[in-house]
Image (cartoon, rainbow, N blue to C red; front, side):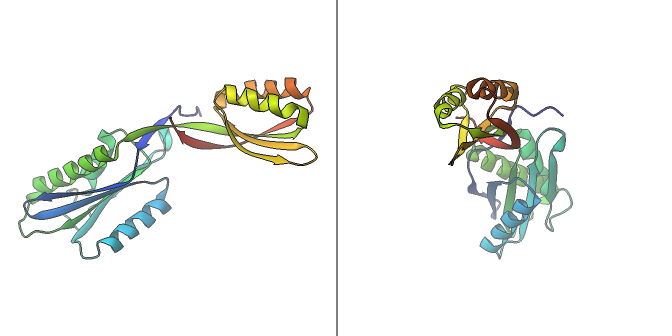
Length: 213
C-alpha cells in the first residue's frame, strides 16, 4: 500500500464554551491517535465536568483506508449529538482528533433539529479555534558500523535532504538513527554505501509523523 504523503490534524488542544437557549455547551478538542488515547481523554473530561448532563463525543483517527471514526450521543436523542460532531470533524478534513462536548441543560428544550445544530456548530467553532497543521511521514533508518572519519559526510548528506537525526551512539564504531522521507530509501542506501565504501550497514525502522514547519 502506498504511503500517504501527509494528513491534517489540529494545531493545538482547546476548550471553548457556547451558550444556546440557556444550555451551556463546552467543547474540548484534543489530538488522539488510537482508541486508548480517546478513552483517556473522555475520562478526563468527564472528571473535569462531573455534573454535566451529557458528554457527547466523536473521534476520527488514522489515514487513508485505515481511517476509523466513532461517536456517542451519551443519552441525547439518537443521532442528535454524536453524528453532528463527527460531521464537523469530516467537514474540516482532519484526522487524529477527538471532540467531547459537555452539556449543561438550561431548562429549555432545543428539539432534535436544535440539538443537531447546537452540537455541530459548537464542534465547528472549537475545531476552527484549534487550527490545522499538516503532518508528513518519515521512515527511520538505522546506520551501523560507521567509522569516525565518515561520520561528518554522512550527517551532512542527511541534513542536505532535511533529514532528522534521532540519535548517535558512539563506540568502537558509530550507530546513527535518522528519519527521512521513505522515497529517499534508495538515495540514503547509495549515499552510505559510497561514503563508507560499503563498510556500513543500513536497517529500516518504523514510520513517524512530523508536523510541517
